[in-house]
Amino acid sequence: MDNLRGAAIMVLAMLGFAIEDMFIKMLAGAVPVGQILMLLGTGGSLIFAVIVRLQGRALFERAMWSGPVLTRAAGEIIGTVGFVNAIVFTTLSSASAILQATPLVVTLGAAVFLSEPVGWRRWSAILIGFFGVLMIVRPGLAGFTPLSLFAVLGVLGLAVRDLATRKTTKSLSTMQLSFLGFLAIVPAGAGLIAFGPDVLTPMSLRSLAIMSIALVIGVVAYYGIVAAMRVGDISFVTPFRYTRLIFALILGASIFGDRPDKWTLIGAAIIVASGIYTVWRERRIKAQP
Image (cartoon, rainbow, N blue to C red; front, top):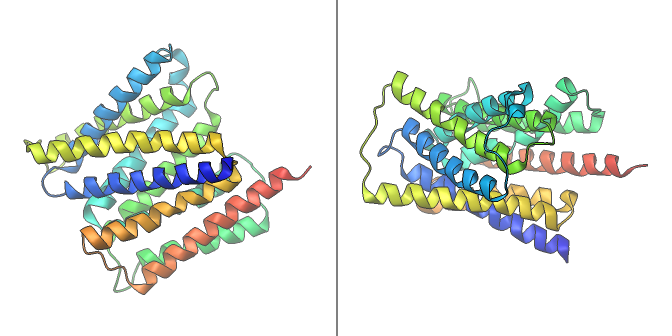
């Protein structure tokens, strides 16, 4: 029963993230990407700052200046900048499909940089999953869109964040790391405004409302992931993360008129299947005596 509750919470959390992505895409054209990042970072860091203080923890500690924590912040910046640009400049469906390759890159990075054992089965799943990404991006072919590389950049950044998280000291709480992650996005957005072609734009009440709703939904969805992992078994709950792609396909088609071609759909299916197999295989190995 706990596993079913955990799975239901995870599905709702993924729906929340898909809705957040939808609202961010609605702001495209009206609000520069750098400004979106600044607002997301400011709002998210303020919310998590309140949570951290309510937990009786400090917002800044000496341990936050360690290499893994700084690397995690850098990964957060790269991943968020890449994925938000992908949402704004490409279709919601293709950006979300490529994002699903993040767990595969994390497994690859864990093997290469953290010396975690990865057998030939998971290596095969990783390679097959990357083939699915190539089917969506299609470099060198007629369907190639250079802007889709923003999603690939997002995947790499988020993978760096997740790998660095594994090496951070246990003395820092999840809420403290989340506060720092959102805080790091603020100067990144400011940098895009300062050195890019865009300028700060006055926002209408509609844009402010959309931004606020996206922020609140994103924070609630984050809590949903944490709750789902605590309620159910990780090996049972984790595959339901991929429902985010289903919601993205539905919202992309119904709101923005996305019509992903067969290669995008096949590539997305390959990525999801490879990711689920990798999770299943990893949990099975850890369960062995």
